[in-house]
Structures are given as structure tokens and as C-alpha cells.
Image 1 (cartoon, rainbow, N blue to C red):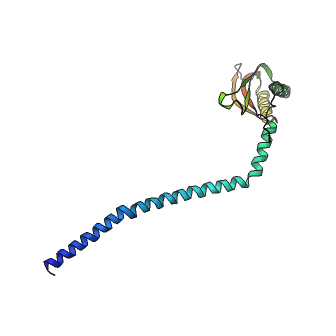
Image 2 (cartoon, rainbow, N blue to C red):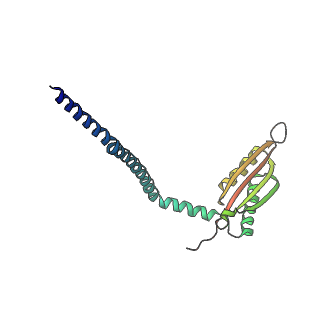
Image 3 (cartoon, one colour):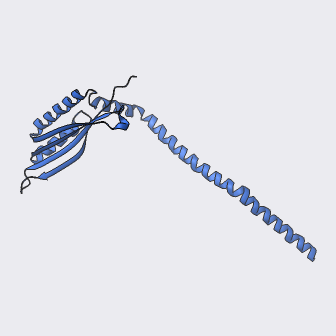
Length: 180
């Protein structure tokens, strides 16, 4: 092979190498990135679709649960809501034989949710033995009213731990009536 032919082979090899490098940088690498991103997005969309199908399949159960929760919500009128909660507390106290020392209902309605819901929060201070306290808490949880226990504080009032004090805060939502 002569020098001239060698120079042509080197020039041709350099041109082909440069074309491959430019093709990789300009076409192949960006296309691979786009394909990878699209594959990732397709995976996310498939996952979202699967979740949506699951939710649609559970629609009746979810709607039924929501209807149960709305039925258990406190009445829209504040006085009847307070009355219902106070009657329930009285019933729980009678069943559990707990000695209530204080009961404070308090209404809260956050500004950003003024039209969405109101919340009745009640704080009960009482004392009794372990059985009466556990029965009282059990009655709160099993009541048909949609109430949520938010804080519980139990302390011993004597050295033996037989007389306990209970401070519990629970709340319930008042959902506004919506026209269908």
C-alpha cells in the first residue's frame, strides 16, 4: 500500500469515525433518552390505570362506606349536634360507670374550609378504674356517631394505680347538606 492510499484510508476512517460520533451525539443519544423517558412515563401511566381500574371496581364499596360515614356524621344544626354528642357521652358514662369531672364541647371551623365542614371537639376529664376507662373508650369507638379519638391521657391518682384519671379529646364532623 502506498502512502497516498494509506492517507485516503486514514482520512476515510477519520470521516467515518467523525460521522459515527456526530450521529451518536446528535441522533442516537437523544433518541435513547426520549425512549427511556417515554418508557418510564408509560410505566407510570399503566400503574395509574391499574389503580383507577381497582378504584372503579371498588366503587360500590367506597360509595357505601362514604354513605355510612355521612349517616354517622353529626347533624348540620349545631344545637342538635351538641345534644347528640352529650347524650352519647351520658350513655357511655352510664355503661362504663366512669366519674366525669368535666365535659367541654368546642366548635371549630377553619377559615379555608368554612363551607365544607365544621368540627365539634369535646374534652372529657374523668376518673375511675381501668375497667371503666377501657369500657368508656370502647363505647366511644363503637358508637354509630362518626367520632374520632384524638388524644388520650391516663394517669394514676393513687400509689396503687387502682384509681386512674382520664383526659380524652374526641371530635366529630358536621358535613353540610349538598343539593344533588
